[in-house]
Image 1 (cartoon, rainbow, N blue to C red):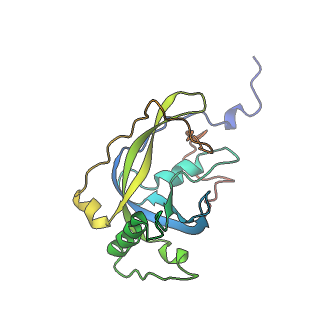
Image 2: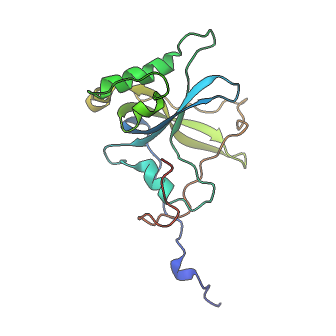
Image 3: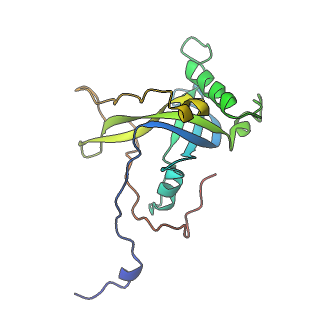
Length: 197
């Protein structure tokens, strides 16, 4: 066999370490105001782990992903209003948790609402959810489920969310982006590894 020209520079697959379910202190990298697919007011909250053994977990995944269409791996879609037009309890929990976690945080309504969260910290409970991949195989993914104050996470005063297995009627949701481990793990940022923030 003739040695491929790019053999020495090609990164091999590395072992992927899944984020365990549990409580984590996260940094908010970005918040976007947008609409859901059904036209409802929503915010997108981009997070990364800020402390402990999994610090910068999603940054490292993003940097080591060689796909052209790579996406940030930890985004929470939170509706602002419930079905009755009242403030969504999840939205209120998010804002309250950020206020409790950041001593000098000042909530700003209006045009600068999304920007006031950038760089702040919040506690997040992550849980495992089962899904069907594009080949119809069952897989598990760890996703953010609930917001809490940072002190709650530091004190360990929480219950890890229960696993959510698929039921016999569950299918792969339309538009679901299956999580695929990064194509390589170079350990250092290179060309094309700029973060999307």
